[in-house]
Image (cartoon, rainbow, N blue to C red; front, side, top):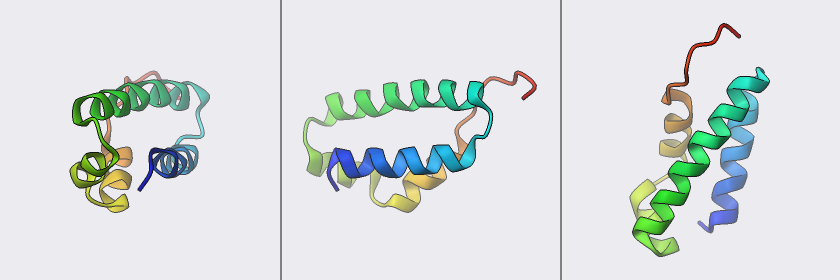
Length: 72
């Protein structure tokens, strides 16, 4: 899976998950930072794929990440 494909999956999942703009903006920032750190740490596309394993794990991660409560 190339980073562009991974990003597309992330975009689709977060758009479907968050209807609140504040939640969505905060989540995009948090996840982008996480993804960038994973990429820098592992260095290669292959290692990213091995680390993440499957799109199911990505989906699970997207839906279990915690965001600050602000009363959306």
